[in-house]
Every structure is written in structure tokens, then in C-alpha cells.
Image 1 (cartoon, rainbow, N blue to C red):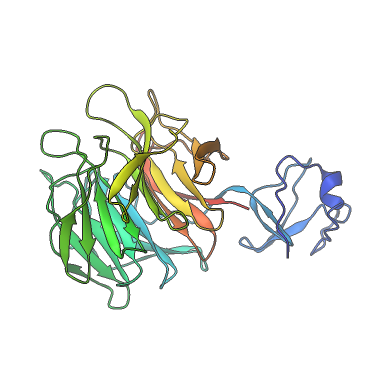
Image 2 (cartoon, rainbow, N blue to C red; image 1 turned 30 degrees about the horizontal axis):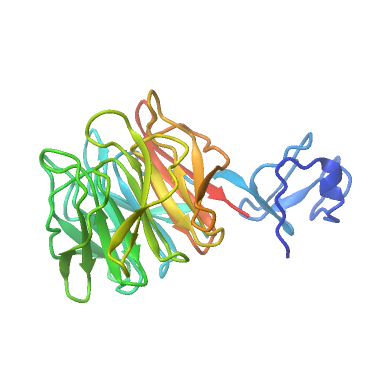
Amino acid sequence: MPLYDLQGLTKLSLRQLNLSPVGQTANPLEPGYYAEIVNQGSLKNPGAGQYPAGYYQGVTIPGWITEASDTTAREWLAAAYDSSANLTYAIDGMNSALLTTVTAYSHASNAWTAEASDTTARESLAAAYDSSANLTYAIDGEVTGMLTTVTAYSHASNAWTAEASDTTARDLLAAAYDSSANLTYAIDGNGTTNALTTVTAYSHASNAWTAEASDTTARDSLAAAYDSSANLTYAIDGYPGTGAIITTVTAYSHASNAWTAEASDTTARDLLGAAYDSSANLTYAIDGLGTTNALTTVTAYSHASNAWTAEASDTTARDSLAAAYDSSANLTYAIDGYTSIEISLVTAYLSV
């Protein structure tokens, strides 16, 4: 069925799309006013021309929906989507103590389950899923100092194994997997004394890290995502170590081993999440810590237009969260984070 963007449409214009209700209620409205939200499996009354985000019969209404909460409240975690298992992992983090806890979210069952614990307790790490090796990497982070530790999770064996250590100790970094080059990048972060421009690349085939061209901007507390259409890896926003948080966006091409400047994000922030939506061909920057407080702001970058646009705001202001895009469900998850306490809230952004 075709997809329609119903944001801002009235009941009349919805009816003119020739949708028919898929169920009855005690006091049904006119045809087209009701539809079944597939992911919730129940009949909903949109009410007064307002249609909640979700999957309707023949229609997708974009926006944020609430998913089952993670079983562990935490901040400074990492996340990655495993396309083979159709699971999104929330990895490690902090809640009064450093965690090794790994949980997995299934959109099909709308439930989180416990996976094997990571072998290293840490916070402020990064994660990425390697679709060629079918492994999810947990990279670097902090215990009492910066780490170079890299571990790999296999869903098939439900076990973590040690991989070659990163060549740079750091926390508050970002990571992304480049499916064209079969490399996982560890990007920038906080070193032992300052914000970094260091970029290293991990090859599972050789179990080794190599140096890539340095980012043009030193920063920590950034986010990253790989755009498979443009074959570019973006480093987004962050904190340069001194002064104010930034809106700087740079793009790495493995083919040229070079970073270039992209259009700046419209919102300055750090401790945000990011993910690339392959269906919409957009990279989202999600929530984070602004100049004075946690944000609900979501912006989307299009490489084709080299521009950022505003998307629907997340339902909860938070920082120190993680994000991942589920290509099977066509949902971008914002996972856990910090408000005034560590939270287990999971929201999902549905794009048309």
C-alpha cells in the first residue's frame, strides 16, 4: 500500500484518501476516521484531527512512538542494530556503577531480553555492528582511565570475545561501520589530556587497527553514522575540549582517505545520538545536551541537498543516550540516557 504523510491533515483530507476503517467501536466515526495501528494491534481514535504516529492501514504517520522500556536504566551506553538477528543491542554504560549489562530489543515482540554480559565494565564507549563478520563491537570507553579495549558480541553464540585493542585510549568517542570498506571506525573522543581528531579503523579480517586520516575538528561527546548511499561516515556535533559545544559536521570518505566539511547542524549539542535511516536516506541527530539543558531536538541531514532540516521532536529531553536504526522495522531508536536520573525509556522515530 502507498504511504502518506498525514502531518497537519484534517479529518476531511484523511477521508478523501479513501481509507476505510478496519474495525468498529460502540460509537464509530465516519469511514476513514479510524484505522488499526499495526505495531500496537488495537483500534485508535485519532480525535479532533490529531493522528498519533504509527502504522495505519495504507498510511504511515511519521513521528515518535514509545517502545518497551529497556530493562536497565543507564546513561553513557552504546547501541547497535544487528541486521542478521533483527535485534538492537544496548551495551554497558553507567547507573551508580559501571555496567557490563547487554540487552537486546526485538521490535517484533516489543520486548527486551538479556544477552551475555560484556567482559569489560565501562561507560562512554562506542559500538558498531559489522554486517560482514556478523559481530557487534564495543569499543574503548572509561573505567578509572581511558581504555583501548575492544570486545565483539556474536548473537549466534551469545558470547563476547576479545578483539585487537584500539591504538588510542579514549572515551566519549563515536563509531560507525563502513559496509563498503568492511571497516569499523573509532572517531575522535576524549584522550588522556584533551579532545582528539584521531580516527582508527578496525578490520575483522586482519584483526588489526590502522590509522585513517584525522578528523579536521578535535572533539569528544560527538555522534557518528555511516551513510551507505553517499558512502560517507559523518562525525556530528560534540564538545571541542574548551569553549562552547559545536554544530560542526564532517564527512569521511575511505576512498579518498579524507575528511570534508558538510553543512553544520542547526543545533549545538553534545552527548547526543545519531543514526542513518536508509529508507529515508537521512542521518538523524537526536536529543543531547544543549548549552543549558537536555534537548528533544531532532534534525535530519540530507547529503543530496547538503542541508539539515527539523524533524518531529523526541518525547523526552535527555542526553547521554544511544541511538540505532532498525532497517527491518524502519524505526530509529533513542535508548536510555539521562534526564535528572538515569532512565530506561526507549522511543522510536517512524519516517515516511
